Image 1: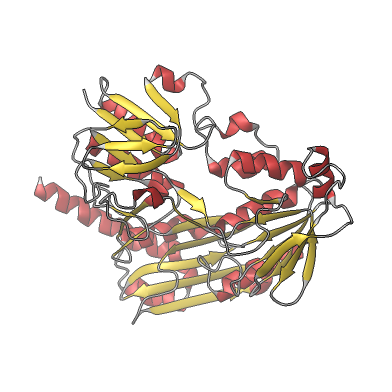
Image 2 (image 1 turned 90 degrees about the vertical axis):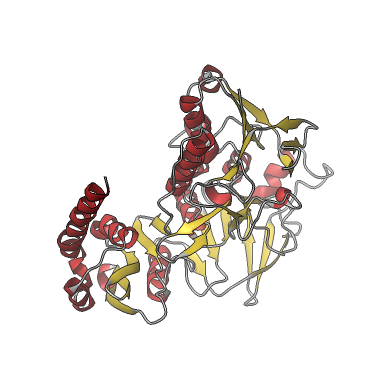
Length: 448
């Protein structure tokens, strides 16, 4: 009987554990999660903040006996070291877990920017359920909230905050919103949309410091006093945020959403190869036999760019976890690849980004902007293959764009048609992708 140890109790870790149980009914399975919570989805936190779900609604599995029923042991602790020679994982509770197969699915952690005042009461990330509880206590209607960061995660948080009725300001050091997902035109259109919805947006701006606002007590100070923070004589104060442009903003709550990075620091000196994330092969195995990685901490092959990437989105995490677990169970399974995929709803404006949306050397691109209608479409080509795209307000083509980019479909004469009229994506997909799929099916039949 083998012992499978899984580090990480997020979607990747839980899917892997359940897959292993299905294929290894007698093996021992242990999942280690570093939060004192039932396994939950971070993607549900915005819904918790706007009251669409309660805390149990964020749980990955609703039954309280789900893991007991599957004989999956959940350990609430943090991994501090992996000894691949001894095949053990050391935990911060002093426990040492021996493993036969190990899956690292520790996800990501918020980046901590070098800004003074991040530890003041009223300054939070929005990454854990504990964060959500703190934010919900402060983000009352009319509260002044400043959010640092307007990336993918920041825009999701922003919508939840606006629905809570706060007075919201967003500070982004990039020259546009969602700079790692959108080009200048698309990012600018998202900014215009947000400002029209009442959000103050500061781009090309940094937060230089966060300070106590002084003697005038803001909402955060009043709550801090009520909770007994401080010396009991001062009910607390609000926050003052200094920006790089010389401006100063008052806030009751500051949220840091300046990005995330793979949680892999504990692997130092483990012998497991890490670049941006944990480097894996097509079976999600690391350079160490019987040690696998999946999810936001894993670096896997991107079939579009031809490089290894960390693609921190849940669909990729789920598929990587499935592939890793099947290989841990002795079933030879390969990952087809990952692609940069982002579909974002920003206060009702849908935008998307796929593949090499910035273009490739020697490539061509086509662009169409209907600014008054709030629509923008940018296509990037390498030869006759669509290798990346951006869209704003063009919801009918999202699935087709993904299919063309991931499928690396040869467009032939349709490439020239799309260069003239990018809106012909659906027609191009029907004409080219289906034909390519029929050809691939014939090839597969011949091989058999």
